[in-house]
Image (cartoon, rainbow, N blue to C red):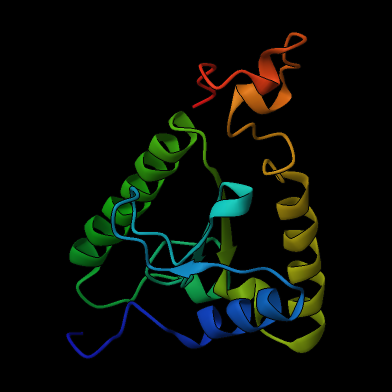
Length: 155
């Protein structure tokens, strides 16, 4: 198990490639956010988790528990699921929009296109950069004569 990579997996690469082709720019594995999301789109205040069905206990066929050492795997996967829920709650609390993409949802070209199209549409609906006001002064009209006043501090 020590050789199983948690970063830059094939499903993550598929998601990254599609998002980039659609014009989205992102950061990978931002460690200062809860859950260390696989992708972060700061412009949209959105984080994306690309979960392997087995490791995160998805209800599909790939998420089936092994027959051997069942107690160990049940505890481990249940703890992963609980941690995922806690991290999503923390992210929502601080204003992020979490999206989870399951490995089985992007296996096969047709499923991949459909799921990624849905994800892109959802991300675009979160575009907060258009509403974001960086400085309230930029939107406040100045009283007459103050624009020429050198004593007027706008910062």
